[in-house]
Image (cartoon, rainbow, N blue to C red):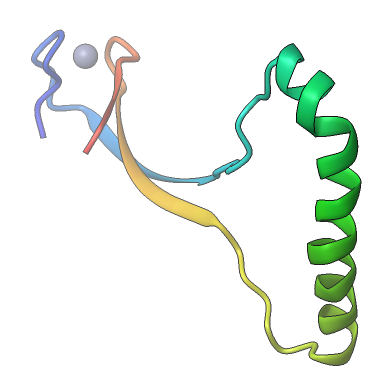
Length: 82
Ligand SMILES: [Zn+2]
């Protein structure tokens, strides 16, 4: 492995796990029109059954961690994805 910035071969490969957030940021208008009633309903419809399911069905656990490999140059500190 050669660093693309300085050409050094002193490069470490690290496995980085990152948690992905699925929720996108909603705008102000969305909150005025939809958010104030949709979020509690969504919470009731999806989160409460999900909580009950989590209590009564303890084996199903899903993580959204995603592993990726990152190269780190020990010479100049540049990081890039593998
Ligand atoms: Zn470098």
